[in-house]
Length: 216
Image (tube, rainbow, N blue to C red; front, side, top):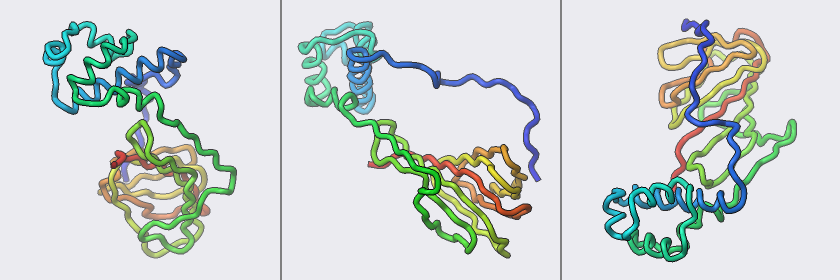
């Protein structure tokens, strides 16, 4: 059985979860810059090449892509021509709707997963369709109330986080077995076979949060 790490080493986050974006114009600048960068990278155009096509300096292009300056309509038209895209495409990220889903206690949508056994309940706690992040996240509340002789193993794209709420289970990931008690977490590559192996204390409840790339 795999053992949980004992150390509490502080990691370094790649982004600040408490960062506050500036409102209004700065948000628009950031949205335009991200769209220009995405189009440039997608087309394999370097800063030097885009500078040659538009007459804008590399430092100015960098400021635009990072949202540090507000480009004029003339500048946006130059960039649109160079990247062979309508000027309106630069505003798509700014215009996109950002949604939130509020699920009341006990109102999660009960669903089934392949291999689900009797006494294994899966409640989907919310779902966002296509969104600006490019990532799909599926949060489930899983409740196990009956012992079964065999347990399903799941294998799918993306990554998964399990947070144990109640009970105790042995959870398999690949060839390793992890004992999960309330408050424990398990974060793993979901492409490896995984699932509950032994139900030690029932009822068992845990959050399962699955994320994977959004497909168009």
